[in-house]
Length: 147
Image: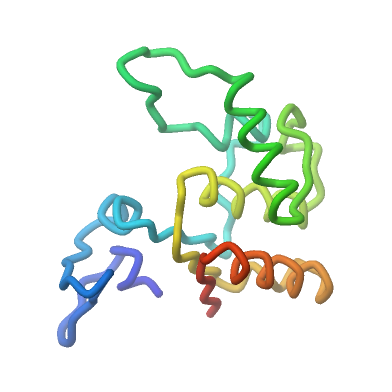
């Protein structure tokens, strides 16, 4: 998983995305190819809201400002569509661990990830929620891999 996400170099073999050989030298490259990873240790800013964490590091055209309202609406739509319902305005520090995990998954979906690598994150999901989420991914044409 670490190689596929660009954290480590591979010493043999090849990685094909959409039938084309790619080199994944840093985490930026997999993201550009639609690959996202939910790490075992969440990468959230606890004092930020769900929507602020979701759009952190993104740009919206040439404007230095991001439209939080529009981002919140898109996030609500994604969360409802995938059965990962949450409040975009909620502060991450007030959320239970299972909801924080949903934030991590929705961050990837917000960035249009087509392949989601789950580094043991389904361990904090209930079996029912984990199954529901994986079915939602399959139904939307997304793939999920877990280690």
